[in-house]
Length: 397
Image (cartoon, rainbow, N blue to C red; front, side, top):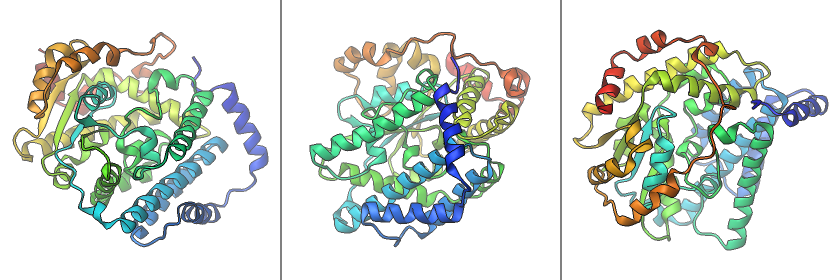
């Protein structure tokens, strides 16, 4: 299956003819003003957020965006700004939201392609648990009327359907559904998830110096808004990003538990690079697979090392290590023990849900990838990850 559809190529051609010269300064000012107008929000409290996101916006512009990429980056920036203004306005209007307690949330993390999504779906679907739905991450708000809810779900559905029209293979790589739990990167403004759309060395360097404290506080504010006035449930969140910030995560959310999924990084790397190449082709005019491989070997090995350094410094029992096979191949045997470590209870209802949750779209050979396409080989991956392979092998026994 092609990574980029004929529809995407035609769309790029039409936009290239009609687009004219890009003016990033004018475009950015327009995005901010539209976001303010659409939400009735204001700039107070978002000055640093806006400045940092403008830096990211400029990095995207410098990455040689395709016409489709330009439209996508502008649309996402507007959506994130609107959600930021909406959240802060809601809290300003209802100050009691800031006193909401986010109690002992569960964070699922690990390298991409290590069953983090499956683990997240299983735990978030258990009684007393809840994961933020994709549409809620785009439109973070207190309870709204049914018509508004339906309109917002439709809006997100149009976005996901558009993605599949431009890149049908995405349904095989990472299916998205507006009314299912999704990653909290849709709230966290910065991180390596932004590098999935374009290879941006300057942004990668900036990320390594960025203070993520305000980003995680914003995630907490979003959860406070989403739980306000609704039935109480224990939050279950997920993204590989958290590997880089385990200490900050626990400081922001005292009592949090972390499920760290593990898998052989040689198996992981090819799949991750394939996903990134596909997403980058939707945004950049030219994508060099070797650049993708070099960047993401650094990104993922660095994240693993940071997570391993942080883990011993966390309160005992905070991190629960979960090998890939335990959830992907034999969850019925392993998940009751996982739940016990999380302070949760595995029930007959959870057992009965497993078959449905474990269902996957038909996977076939249309999604193929090799390490060599990305300028990598197993020895390079082993060297980058060091003795992490020993940890994975020990957990898999």
